[in-house]
Image (tube, rainbow, N blue to C red; front, side, top):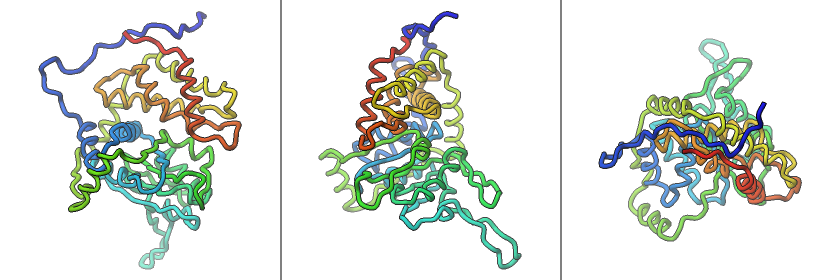
Length: 333
């Protein structure tokens, strides 16, 4: 069996973009991005990444200081896709049943009836997730991995699309619990919104003097249309060499001397799925190595466990950057 040549040239399928002079066809994705951008100014890349994760049926971890718009971003997405949104304020005394729901006695019939928890929504905001106890954090594992909730031996299916947007304060802030590796592994991407630039912050102040921009957001698509978009994104074609490139990136993180546990196979799957969603948003039905490269910095770092217990997320990002710099990508032509 011949060894794989990482420099192999992959023939790219013909592009499907519009011919010169033709008007650009607006897509559901572009309408959603524009709707969310009317609420969150100056964060186009972050909005595109969250939309990518939503299309790829993943979940997002937003880590940043309070007050930079993390919750507003999630609410804007729910409004833009015409879906439902529920917010869970995580606190140390929050119980798992406060998230998933519970069986209650129906006084009329004398039978147990399932009372759905706030997780039964298209977009669930788990605000300050690292203020909840590890046991309560674990209540989200089945929801995020399988899109369902099991209570008293009965399985209840969650709506589609389904996205958990968990916000997390920096871990050195008072009253926070570190997310366990199994919980972090369920998130497809980790983002930091950061402070807006001066012009964006001024525009936000002026816009909110007379109205709340979120109230003006109208659905840019329907739930059914968005489910169809998810199906199209899932069917994006991936050449084996591009898939092998994603696998080599993950394996490169496992061999780094600073890493105790590298990116898991689940992380590799998430990387490919996110890259396919990105390709779809860019109007392609085939996967490019560039799609994998662009998403790797958001998908892989939070899956790494460093040898140094005091290592920061930036240290993990540096490992992924090294993997990207030393792993040869196939060439598309």
